[in-house]
Image 1 (tube, rainbow, N blue to C red):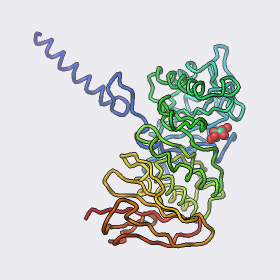
Image 2 (cartoon, protein in one colour):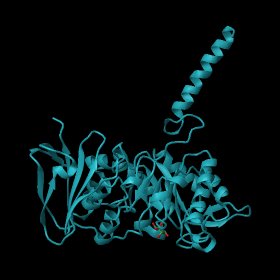
Image 3 (cartoon, protein in one colour):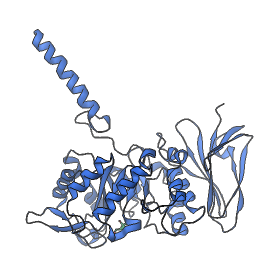
Image 4 (cartoon, helix red, strand yellow):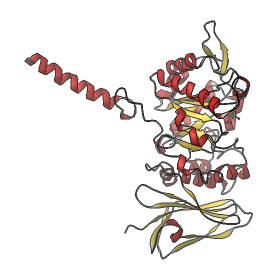
Length: 394
Ligand code: GLA
């Protein structure tokens, strides 16, 4: 190789190195991008706005995600749920409806804030709210999403039953089809399966799912939230970096979670390594709602790099203790009370695999409590949670 050749080889290898560093999430060319290495965090229009979502609502949510500091603690995706679709054009390309006149411009706006942009569709001919689904247009829709700059797709079964036989193999094939369509665009797009039949947690990752719904719809109601969250117990082995169980979105800041209930959802979801997708109006939320959504210690539990989903370690009637092992060897522990009266709850260190004394800090409000010999006891308010970090390190 002559001097020119050597210099060319040197320049080429620097370019390859730069391309590798600059590619999504640091992957090498040709390798599959590693998406959702920690549970996705963001906002979705459905729980608060339903079908009243508009371009202006989404822009305002993106603005608020930045101005409130939510972006700084990790919220990233701005996702439009159902009801954005209009008709297809003569070539079959999907278009936004009158509330979304220019989806590409909207995606650009969200990206200009340093955030990511998500959409919703269905494998069937219609979405759950009766809008245009992706059936028969999967590759075309995936290409359109990639052109618009979509980073996250929630794919909701709904009318899939009208066109696919109702069995596990055909359901998987329908999800696999969209996964392949998304992949062939070359754009990294988080794939969110909105489907909870046929034990989706067993196969969601095998059809490219980064998260999958494990329950029916959450509602703005403590009891429904508690059922969705606690039903994750036993599913922990199916969760991990890149593939998460999804007990549905947050209801914090909507009308009916009151007093300690918002903290309870946030604490339980974090111990579950669940996606943290806010579902309230970010532009009008109270200080208390914002504080519940943005406690950095609680978010750090959810986003722990080990990606281990926590589990219940004890239960006595309405009193439960849940534990999540963290990457640094410490444990995040939630003491919960789903009863109607304030009650004392004890977390035994032996049930966490800890023998001997350990230091305890409370996460709401953030405070070191010192060393405890073999257990930790607290009064937990009705529908409330006390969340602690337990560490044997000096
Ligand atoms: C289903 C989903 C919800 C929401 C609606 C939209 O019910 O489970 O999360 O996406 O459809 O129609």
